[in-house]
Amino acid sequence: MTEHHIGAERPLIPMPPITPAALRTAVAQIAPSRLRDFNAHLDQAAEQAALQSSVAPLRGFLQYWGEFIAVQRIPERAARVRELEDAAQSAVDVYELTGVSEELREILETARSEVAP
Image 1 (cartoon, one colour):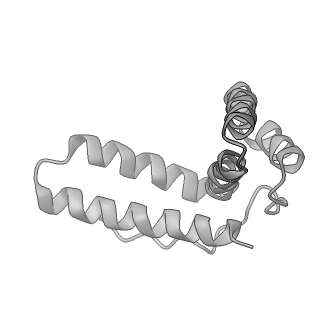
Image 2: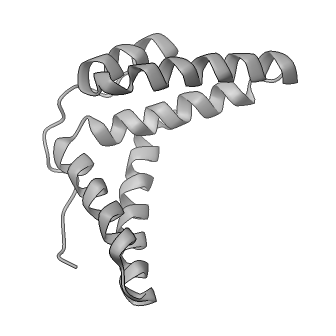
């Protein structure tokens, strides 16, 4: 596994506020093919929130799409995630899979930190 340094790449867009409207705009800008998924997930989260009398489903929705944008807004980061997902599918032993998983975890933790308030 070659070493990749994620973080110095220039983002396509600034990290948006973590609101449905701002995230929808960001998805439309950098991953328009995922807009249908975004809208369906928002509808599902709103329905679950109403059924459960809880904002937890909406928070989960915002977190998921915030992390998605945090990854996708940096092309090199998004490409590396795709490479790691492919590598995980073709890993031949637990050591290779562990290395792939660790790097993927680091990238996703970075994305999560960009979403956290």
